[in-house]
Length: 131
Image (tube, rainbow, N blue to C red; front, side, top):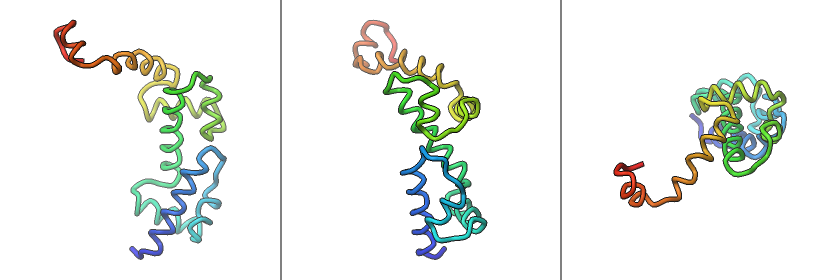
């Protein structure tokens, strides 16, 4: 692949990373690479082994996980903050990618978090098994 095209694809991917919270279209993203939408889609998939939509969804889900882990805000607010337009779509995609609903993911993370702050040697000493 031409190095110039790779740089342009990376520029478009960085644009998605920076603007994941906005309702982005393929036209907007492909303009960042100065490539027609059809060719951009094909080249992006060929280069990064996923479509631009899949990449953007993955990026949004990663950010949603960070927010669910770090901030006590409603799942609905997380949904819209990371760029999803529908709560139902967000929950469905989150469950597909993570294996749990956002609410369940938060509960699991909160339950595991206190144990991660306890040194493993203490857990082993008092329970007889490593965590």
